[in-house]
Image (cartoon, rainbow, N blue to C red; front, side, top):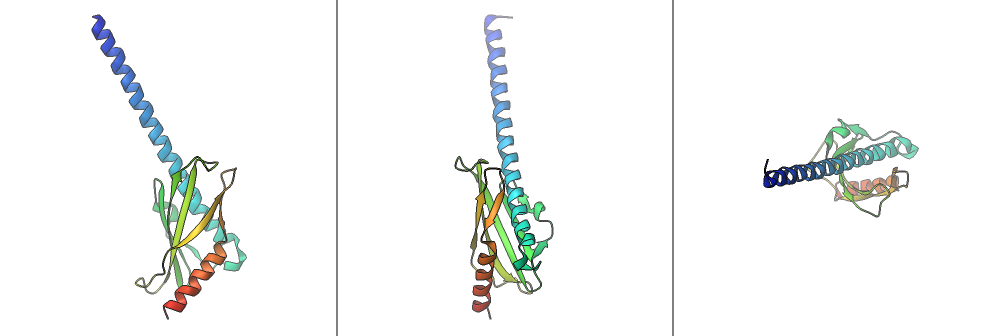
Length: 154
């Protein structure tokens, strides 16, 4: 094997290793973003379940974890009369202990009619140092958004 062939083999091997490393790093970022999105969805659902003021009114509709695509999510919490449609995503950041910052918003709609919806209402999400995601003031935000929606759509 010539000196050039050795050089070419080493260079191609190094390039393949770099491509694999970049691919692995990308896949790791996608996996971590997906896990952060799942954790965000579950945290919001748990906040509804654990807050007695909701009284179990809103329940997850369909499979909320099935509506996650990489760093984005959509899911619905349904009650007898109202539906809350959540959308959100997680973004990479150095400001968060987990490396990701979740963002979520919801719209209120009547369960019987999908034509009238409220404007977006942001959900404040706090990321704890242990990685837990806590929706802050969820009851108050949902209550205010619901009151506004009903007032404007009756």
